[in-house]
View 1 (cartoon, one colour):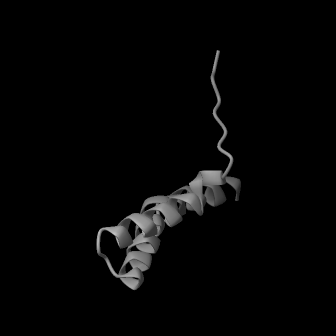
View 2 (view 1 turned 135 degrees about the vertical axis):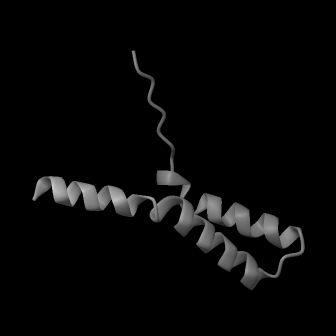
Length: 62
């Protein structure tokens, strides 16, 4: 039997970024730097690893 957990927000988009921005700002990081760091972190940890998978799927379907 497999257990499946569904979140209210897909991949935590929006909630993670807001929390990260607030926490970095509370720790003294300027808002612009916090936003840049959050966007880079999300891009490098979520979207960048998807690129090879998309490439393999397109190649397999062709």
